[in-house]
Structure formats: C-alpha cells, structure tokens
Length: 451
Image (cartoon, rainbow, N blue to C red):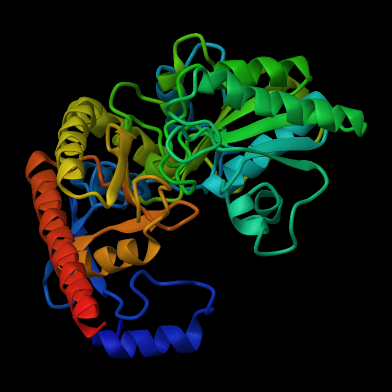
C-alpha cells in the first residue's frame, strides 16, 4: 500500500537523505513538487498549474491518452525481450524507415539516448577500424563513461580531454569564432574540422567519427549554418570516418519544416548514423540507432551478437508507434512550425524593446533567446538569466537556461504548446524584463546620488 502523499518539505527531506546529491533539482533553492501533468501543463501538490516550456521528453504532450492506451493494452498481452518474433518491432522499424533517407535502413532499439550514442560510437569504430572522435565544443552526448569522454560539457570538469578526442568550435554565427558578418562562415567552420583532421594525422591518429547534435542544445540552442554538415562530412569521409547525427533532443518533427533536424542542412546531406531518444517514447524509456546496411553488416561481422534485453520490447514499440500516430494525426510537425514562427516573431519584437535580448534563434519549437550584458561584446547575462528563470517559476512558467554562459533561455516544450501559451510566455517575460530594467535604473540613480 502506498503511503499518503507527503507535503513538499517532507519529500525534499527524504530525497536529500536517500538520493545522490549529484542528482540535481530544478530550482534547487525552492523546488517544485509535481504530481500530475497533461498536455503542456504540469501541476503541483496544491493543484497549481505550470506551463511547461522545456520538457521535450513529453513530445506529444504529458500523459497523452493515445500513448497511455497503447502502453496499457500491450502490457495486458505481452512484454518480453526481442528474441521472439513480434509484429510491433518490425512495424515500428518500418514506420521509422519511412521518415528517413532510404540508405538509413537498419535499426537497433535500446532503452535510452545514452545507450544509443554508445552503440553509435562502437559501430563507427568497428566500421572504420579507427579510434578518434571529433566533437563540437560544449557538447553533451550522454552519461555513460564512453560518452562523458566525448562531451566537453562534462569532461572539462572531470578528468579532462582524452588523446583520442578532438574538439571543434561550435558553428555559432552569433557569438562564435566566425559570426554573421563573416563572408563564408560555413567554409570557415568546416575548415576548422579539416585542420583538426590534418593535425591528428600528423600525430599518426585516425578519425572514426564526427559526432554532433544536429542542433547543439547544451551548447546554447545553436542553428548551424546550412551547408556546414555537408562540408564537414566531406572532410570526415575523406579521412575514413563516419558522420553521426545525434537527434536525441531535436528529432521527430520538432524543427517544424522537417521531421529530422539534420534535414535542415539540405536534401544532399545524409548522416551515416542517426541516434534517437527522449521524445521517441514520450517519457517511456525507448531509443534507437539507424544506420546503413554496410555499417550494420560490418558491425555484425565480428560474430559478437548485439543484445539489449528490453530494447525493442513489444510495449516500447507499441508506444513508439502511438507517438508517430499522434504526430501524424494531430499534425504536430506543422503545428511546431506555425507556433514556433509565432513565438520567434514575438521574441524578435521584444528584442527591439529590451537590449538584454541579444539574439533570437531557432527552428520550430526549438528556440534560444540569448541574453547579454552589452551589445558590443555580447557578454553573457548569466545572473540576469537566472533571476528571470526564478521569477518565471513564480509566474507558473517552467523554463531553464543553456549555453556555456548559462544565459540562453531554451524553449523545447511539448509539441502541443500553442499560440496562447506563446503569447502568455512572451508577455510575462516582457513584464519581468521591464521590472528588471526599472530596478536597475533605480539602483543606478541611488548609486549616483550617493556619490
């Protein structure tokens, strides 16, 4: 029998007693206790409704009835490992293949994005017989040891960079190495990768893979300039490596114009391996690796089987199918484009009014609002961003920050996020930024008078 619901303070005390302190909470100074969620809304123990602007795991909406029903119905019949024949596995693989370029035709199912990225790394090394990996600065690809090693966001605070890891600059045209005024930022950023490859070869090292999120998220909600991946892939393939596109944060129609974020680069770009997670199961542990038959055959040629006990089980695949059905039935890809464009428009209008907003970038319902201290240097407004996030929580809006300076407001809400939600968020941010500016003005006046 489950105990009666505790109050928030008792729950927090038990968490601090029983759960590892490295497992952080949102708003750790005053955490929210969430007991229920539906669509794009979450509810605390007192029934207060919060607008969820960041939960890209609940892709089609928290507790979507079609997804819940699919899980319940399959759970009542069978849930077992994938060593038995079952239609759900092949039906789901077929549905996923219909969304991808034809050559990405072989699938492996797993339980998490970290597992998917680890498998992709193994495949790349087996296929190329090389070891080294090129990643983007500030990248995060998962919590397994193999992935911490290729995640600058993590390894810079731990044991540092391994000899076989090479870090390329993020193709950020706002605050990166080559900015919007550069005559050819695409080639310039791609040439940074080319230089890394050349330097590695001089040391006798060989490149297995270029590993990148299709849209760098932890790096600051970055939109790489179109054509960058094509040029990078050319350099990587010439060096005998493969291109791995991490779609764990940004796939399944989130970018609006396309089903996969890597497709923003153009029809002529096709990765060698694509990894999926988070939104794929709408909160259920499900992930996938898609690759070419050639890479899959090389991976199998070792004679060592790949077996994931519950990856691709009937319940997971039933849920995956339901998520695809909802995306299609509710036209969520088109919805993401329409609402995302509206949200971007509102923020760009807000940018004119509030100089703290340095840049607004995004695609569909993947949007970053870059807060700065000054227009010339574009210094990250880290403290201001943190204050804004805290105040938004008090207005029942859940948002968070990303980027090296923790100053980029990141929007990756459930795909049912609508026009009214967008206007509510922007109107609230407008009010809070006005309050912050007036508070700073009064502080400056007081400081001037005292001197």
